[in-house]
Each structure stands twice: as structure tokens, then as C-alpha cells.
Image 1 (tube, one colour):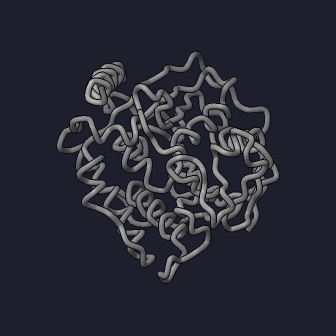
Image 2: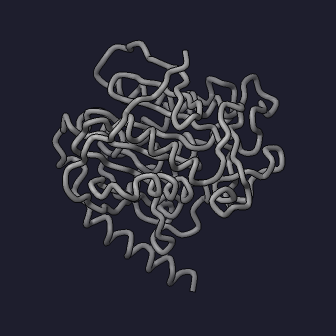
Length: 315
């Protein structure tokens, strides 16, 4: 039976992927903002690339990366016996990967890094060239969504299910009081960044378990949080990516696309290593690199500007 289910999943994944337009067909749009919602700081590199790379260098006026959890693996702000906290090492990997894409044909520039307040919550934001990165730093929920003891068994899943009344960032920067508070905060971020853009794209993990079975709880819950935040915005183009299940599917990227994906992931791991934490290049390269499976739900109409795009900066 497992082999039958896997074969069926492969067929479904191939089918929905074929419905998606070829990545290179979209010309750069000065009115497009593309959002990538990632549970952990290496998710979009592995599962949403080279789509993200192409948005940064050619297809979107602005690309926004929202990293939901600290990716701390239950350590919170702990160092795990190394020189720096693990969550900061993972953040550094994502930051370096984004700079690498944005600087593909440029010399390095200055970044604008600061905490900003959205829905009364302080969130770390980095603006660099035509990219923006957010780090909400809520606790890693572990694959099943039950959380870790060291971080009080907090998780996105437990917050959504009502088992946690609050969800606190590992660095104490914010506390979310219920699922609606979290999704309202995401909506403030989305509205602030999309501004007057007529075309908005939301990139998330696939939420259909028949297509993306046995995925990490944080991946799926991050997708649900992002989707709940824009439930009334029918204009948004939604793209759903196969995550862990892609390891059972054949490589579908050409040589150039694979180079784009692998280079960004390599820079990510170099950023983690720079903060004195180990990586697992061989496992991830053999399991996920070379694969980019997704389906597309087209939006309807033009996106109108939000009523308010004001956010407070904390220097």
C-alpha cells in the first residue's frame, strides 16, 4: 500500500506542476511583489527555488521573505555548545543567501536592518536592494507540532489548535495572543510591503496532504497562517510547493536551474558554518536539490492598495 500511495502522489505532483507556467516565462513586472513564507530559514532555498532566485533577479519589483520560526530545534536562544545561538546561525544563512541573489550582478550594498512594529508586535526586518526579510523567531514546533520542552512546548500547530494561548518569540521580542493575533500581524506585514502593487504572489508550502504527505508541521502551519492572513484577497496569486515529499520525486530542473538552486543553498550553509554550527550538505543535496514541484492558483483581478500601510520603526 505505501508504494501505491507514493506512486499516486508522484502522478498528482507531476500533473499539478505541469499546470504551472514555466518559470522563465514571466517578464519582470514593476508592479509585482512576491512573498515567500518559510517555516525555517532554509526552507525556501530547498523547496521554492529557483523560483525565488528568479523573482529576485528578474521577475518581481520586490521579493519578501517571511521566516516564521527561529528554526531553533528546541534550543531557544541556546548555543548548543557552539559560539553563537543556533537560531542566529540559521538566520545568517538566510540573510547571506538573499544577499547573494540580490548581488548576483552587483557589488555589495548597505542593508537597512531594524525592528519594526506591526499589530503592536516588534519584528526584525532587513531591507536589501529589492528584497525584504522578516524573522518572527517563534519557537520551532518540531516535525509533529508538539513543540520542545526547553521552549515550553510552544508551536504554531498548538497555537492554531488552542492548546497554547500564546506564542512567544524565543528572544522575547514579541508575544502573540492566539492564532488570530498572529495572522493579523502577518496581514499588516503583507499590506505594508505590497503597498500599491497590482500583482501580488504568495508562495507557501503545499497544504494538500495527498500531494505533500508527511510534511513538517511548521511548514504546513506557516502556509495556513499566510493563507488565513489573505483570505479576503482574491487578487493574490497563490503558489503551493511540495516540500519533504519532493525527495521521493525525480529531479525536474535543468542544469542552469539546478545550479541556481544549489548555489543559493550552498551559500545558506556557509552562513550557518560562519556562526560555528554544523550543516548537512550531502543529505539535503541528495534529497531535495534539483527538484521544484508546485501548483498555481491564479488570482482574480487587480490588487487594490490597502487602506493603511503605516508601520512604526524601532531603531
